[in-house]
Image 1 (cartoon, helix red, strand yellow):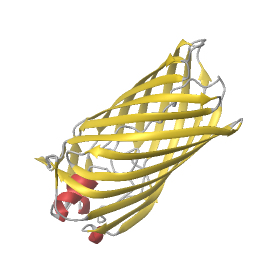
Image 2 (tube, rainbow, N blue to C red):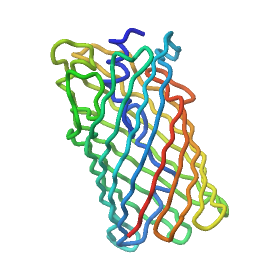
Image 3 (tube, helix red, strand yellow):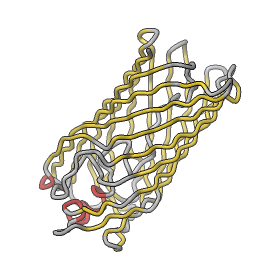
Length: 298
């Protein structure tokens, strides 16, 4: 796959950062569990991902493209009570990290910086407080505040607004077993200064159709404060256009995840997740991902 096409298809369309454009808004199993009223939490995420192959129309392309990302996210949330059933959790998320290309992508170099600020508000409705059955809805607004240089092919910021709408449902299906189902759609503003990433000498305009995604988790809690989960995610849509010309890069990515978490103190939960893509229609395949999370309640 020529580098200029890969730059436009895989990079400008935003696959570099998680939660990333070519995927669902990353939700861990149990994220929509209703927290006690008045809870405040500070959460730190660390993620390492390695991409090792490029795909077009479902076919692996020749060559050895390599792209690694080391990303952190600082997140703050507070739980506000509306009534006996409804809570609202306003949140701030700030990504930051480092991107490094190698192999066939080595000319892209590396890049460090801050990602776009994310403003989110999770609304949770306790259908059955005793069993933990919850319906949730969260809008996410991505503000283009991140590091962006139109003359660089790799960037942590996307230089465009984004709005994502997510719904979720969680319930017990048997003693110690739960299921979490999540769906979302992401709408993209335009990037009107897409040069290097779009393979253009002058400012080009990147537009993208909505991206749809779903996630399903089967969770098992073997003991109090300990949880494991197996998940599958699928994203589709999100075709990109540069100055009106389609990149034919419609997303069709399926990934699997395995998660384990435990409370090491009454107010501190640690979580680890391993994941990988099992099917990619267009773009780079994520060969391996490791997510670490520390969730501190206060």
